[in-house]
Structure formats: structure tokens, C-alpha cells
Length: 303
Ligand code: MAN
Ligand code: CA
Image (cartoon, rainbow, N blue to C red; front, side, top):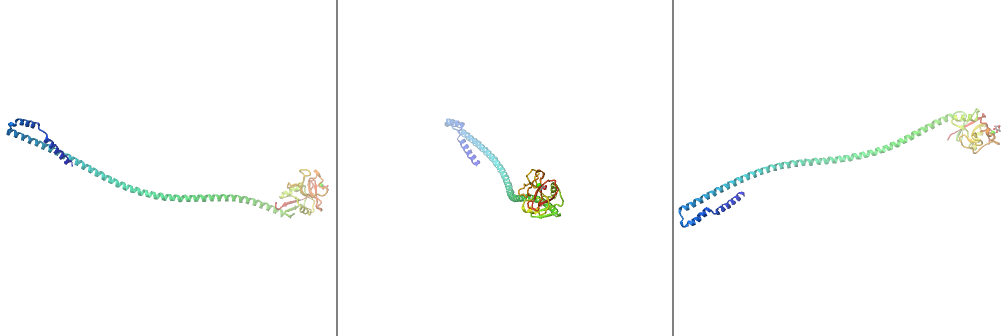
């Protein structure tokens, strides 16, 4: 293509050169015109030789142009070949890089798939473990609650056990006391009738040493029962804390009474009560507390 272009350019140059007026020739022609009237074979030969020289020069120029064009084309070809080789190498490199990248990409895709699969498995494992942990925490809380309940029940049971043991010991002790001679059971109580005599306070102290106290009479049946012993004996009634304010040994005030006629009559001299006139229902008498009498203790069986 370059060659064709150069060829056409060369033809144009040649045509242009061909049309250039030669001043010398023009001069010659003008001279020849001037000398036309006097033309000769020597001047024709001269003109032919000049034309030949010019044509030769033109041929040399054309050859030089052709050589330059050829060199130029060859240089271009060489550059193009080099560029082509370079592009080929670059293409090969790119191709290799593309292959390498594709392989790397495939590997990464595979690794990514594996990671996704492992992540899925790990997520499932985590969820499973979390569910188990929640279950364990729930069971642990239930067990803690049960343990606390059992601890409370155990503490209550131990308290009950201690209380029952104490009651058992007290009952055993009372049973041992009741097993002694002199005790009689009536209704909800057991009664001990002394065989000796003591002051009211000594008598009370003896009853208390047995875990009981002097007899308290709070029903007609009990009064009749007490008279049945037919003993002149201390009962658990006193006004020693305040004249005329008779109280039983458990602190309750005397309401119903079975005083004998004209009793109580001892005022501040007689502050302790006894059964004296046991043949009649109203048998009580107030007496000097220092007097020595039999006494009767009462143990309540259902306190
Ligand atoms: C004695 C004492 C008194 C009582 C009279 C009447 O003197 O027992 O307390 O009042 O007898 O029985
Ligand atoms: Ca009296």
C-alpha cells in the first residue's frame, strides 16, 4: 500500500518535473527562436544531450526514491514484525495469566464452596450445641430449684425431727414419772398424791421437780375427784401476790370456787388454799402457807 502510494507520488513528481520549463532551454528556445532563422545540426545535438542528461538524472532520483521507499518499507515491516512478535508474546503472557487466573479462580471457588459447606456445618453444630446448652441450663435450673426445695424440706424435717426427739424424750421422762407409785389417771390428767407433808412452797417445788405443778381445779368433776382422796392437802391456789386476788399456779384467776362455809377467812395470814372439809363438795380453806400438809400434783396428759 505504501509502495503504491509512493509510486503514484513518484509519477506525480515525474510529471511535474517534465512540465518544468527549462530556463536555459527556454533561453535556448528563445535564443533558437531568435536563432531559428539560423538553426544548425550542432545545436540539435546539444539539445539532445541535455535531454539525455536530464532523463538520466531523473532516473537516478527515481531510483534513490525507490531505494528510500524500500528501506522505509523494510524498516516498517521490521517494526511491524517486532510489534507483532511483541504482541504475540504479550498475548501468550496474557493467555498464560488468564489461565493462571482462571485456575486460581477455580481453586478459590472450590475453597469458597468448601468454606461455605464448613460454615454451614459449623452453624448447624453451633445451633445443636446451643440447643443442648439451653436444655442443660434449663435442667440445671430445675435441679437447683429441686435441690433448694429438698434443702428446705430437709431443714424442716431436721427441725421436726429435733422437736419430735425432744417431745419423745419429754414423753419418756413423763412416762418414767407416771410409772412411779402414787400416780392416778383421771380424765385428761394424772395426779400424784403425796405420802408426806410439806409447806405449800415445798410441796409446789416437789411437783415442779416432776415436771408438773400443784393441782388446778377447774370443773365440778375434778373437785369431786380431789375430795375422793379424803386428804387434808395443798392445792395450786394462792393470793400471796395480792390479798383476795386468788390465782391458780398457771397464772389464771380463780373463777369457779369451792370454798367451805366462812372461808377464806385468814386474810393476809392465810394465803395458800387446801382441801380440808373433803366430806362435803365445797371443801376449800385458806391456810398459813408455812403449814405442813399433804399435797396433790397434777400432770396434764394433753398440754
Ligand atoms: C383453823 C385453820 C383455819 C380455818 C379454821 C376453821 O384455824 O385451818 O384456816 O379457817 O381452822 O376451819
Ligand atoms: Ca382459813
